[in-house]
Image 1: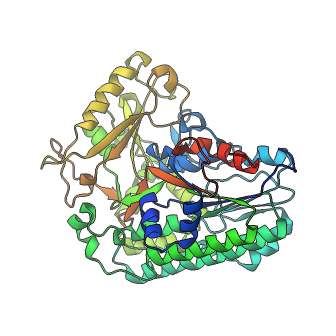
Image 2 (image 1 turned 30 degrees about the horizontal axis):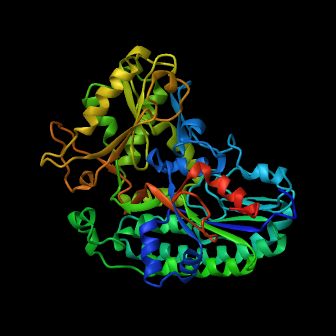
Image 3 (image 1 turned 45 degrees about the horizontal axis):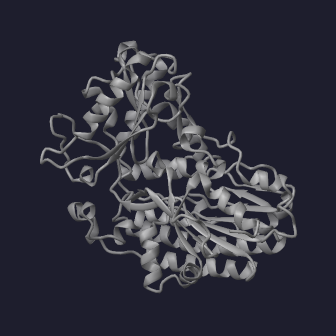
Length: 498
């Protein structure tokens, strides 16, 4: 790229914005800025890696690699060498914009989730200023010269976490909705000031407030959906600001940002995954694997004192009433909650009798095979890997409730062969739960378990597809773009060609 052919590009990421909802708001006249851009440009589907997990989408976008290559699927990652979990830090991925910087293009990046800082000498890079996903639990800014611009608009409202007890916690829902709406305003103001002060060639601005608010307010978008109809959530009173009002403010800020960069600049608006109805996260997979004979918990006598202490602490946390959990997360520093959570995320397994185990998740069911040659305490022979995965996949697909409703929509195999699995950090099987899993008082056919759920305050979970609006017509030869190929579209637009 040369300066003579370079075109200024503004990229705006709307984190976890559901494509069907955005289309609906555009058609209803609620988002005129996006409507104009869509009318004059190109609408593309984004093929998302959200089928693995929501934690895979941003690392895939940034690194231009598939989840199978970069190995990131969530905020807690399995370490096969230590047979334990570690918190993802993001520093082992190189974002594609480093190549742009090395090529002489000035870059500014604001609050892209999971982003590492590359140490810009000019432009701007700011992480966890108003985050939904928290890794470092602190705001990082580079270069120091742009810090006053950020500080002038700080703190972002989402820096103060609002703890909710559920969908009927109206007071805190209103506080959260207002924090997201005000955060969008403040983000727009800050982004405009940064773009004006630095004049970067490529500005990437992420609005994380949509992700945060949609998790808690989605039952008001689809109140008649069966998930909400069955549990009565769809009839709960709507709080203000509504999700539509939050999206309206987002559209206003997008319009102002487009005006800031000027009519000659190219614009791309995108979401890497969407949102769909849910009610918490199924948390019964570890117990189900034990019941199926695939996993075995260590008995009390075989545990170390540390394992016994952590098991006790984990049970205590899970049994706390919602108000006490709210106080716990409100008073404890975020980094300390991570440190205390780490040893309690997995039950104490007897690895010598565990063939497969469940990894902690915020949505899908994740199953990892205890494979010899990959796991430090592996017991499954490589020659049995494909046979057992096929057998277990069929067993999961057949899971149903006692009234005959299928509980599993799909099962994804991340490795088709044992050779491919040996170097992979991902779960081996990814279970996509069907809507029937959220039925009140769920009972599983052929099982004595009483299914447990986590995060019952969450009314929305991640959809499996995103969208992209490009200001240029015929910006892509296909009607879609893969998340790992978004960087190619961005480089194409910066080049002034399509």
